[in-house]
Length: 286
Image 1: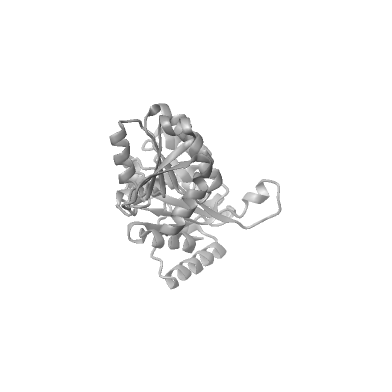
Image 2 (image 1 turned 120 degrees about the horizontal axis):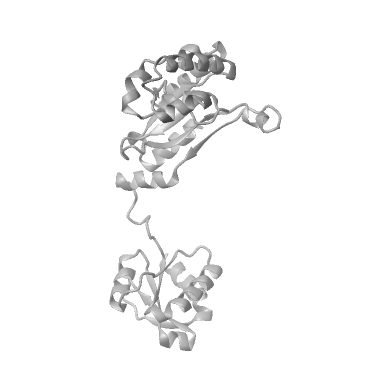
């Protein structure tokens, strides 16, 4: 799973901008023993804990380790580390994992304060983080949860997975200027109602074309504006064809095909035949 996510970063050009952080939570038995040790340590420093950490002291003390409160940083750095309390089997499992990552050329850092928010996690947990987005640094996070299926009433089933913030991933790509220019708003056809009165008819026609040509990348103009500004938006898109729809076209149940990249005369096409015409034009251009 880690290699799969690493492959994604490589494909997106992000590998040099993210860091793999690892930790092991061990077995449930080892974690329970460590929890008692950790609670005892935190109780010795109760006056330093913030209100959120005091609440977690009885519910999920491991999450206190993940606190970003700078007033607690020194105390947390000195806290007992779970890695020192692992059972032998979990320690061996973690060592095998790191050797596999090293063999695959995947760099990582061990973060002893890395925990997941849910109690069913066990053994390896991981996060891919970045410094390019300020405090919102986690792009992808996951780990093992071997006991989850059994907790839900099923048979014991080892499991692993991760969650990814798609919006955060897109924001990272945008921040680092790694999104190709033609990836945003890329389209084959720009459907342009000539004024606001044609918008409803344009929406209907757009749905007709999307039904006839599922593979068609069609962008429907929105946002109003003068006819001149609408044509400028069509020109700035990646579309090779603009479909113009005005009062005359609506009355005649037709559409005007305007070629944006070629010096060809625009042509009038019936709306019923428009899908067929676009398929032929775009196939010929390709």
